[in-house]
Length: 299
Image 1 (cartoon, rainbow, N blue to C red):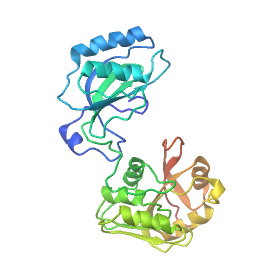
Image 2: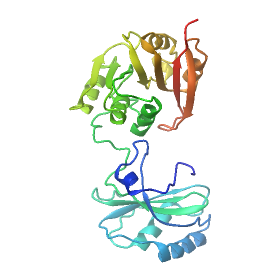
Image 3: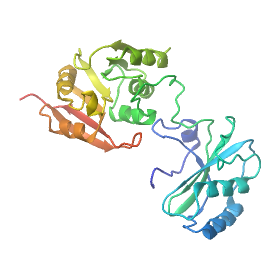
Image 4: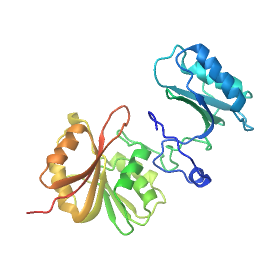
């Protein structure tokens, strides 16, 4: 494991049915020592790769490189090196041009110890979802929503609520994790509800309604939600919403919410809640936390 990367011994089953939590997945085709920060080292790494890199038959393709640490070469130098080794219909991004839509994608990662060269076995990145036709401001990255659903421990027959549902990302990812539960999304924005309806077309057991997140009816088994993090729109203080969430949640229910640091701290000290887990994530250049909490029994 290194920055933004997890390397595993994979099975064909994993590749055929990849985890929804993965942002993307590539099959490693070669690995050599990290070339260091000099161009001479990069050239030596290229010579080493030439001896071990197995190149499958392919049409048009592009290469994307990621480099950790200071180097006296850039990502385009790495990408063009791999493109030269692979040969064929390589499309460089150096001049800012966009490769053709119908292409395979290679990924190169220099993590300070190893130079990984890998090929995506899918047509598009894993984080792209076929259901995602529309988004709204604040729509969550689907793999993060899938992680929230996993942390919720969903079970068949449960009723799952998202009081800030937006375009439906959290509940639609939860439905993919546990299709035998029922889902209800609420949002003040009618445009968001329309987007959620478009995204969930043909999906059973998912309902949407225009409504105030502070006026909920229950009981529900799980609350999964991504409330606004920006205090400028008046929802920095979640106390009124926390009271409503606790009122509608069953005694054995769980709240899983992605919050900014102030909101997470607020929930951790709220008298009606017991925090079970906190998970730091990176989303859209920011660093919120997924908080898992249960109702604290009344005294």
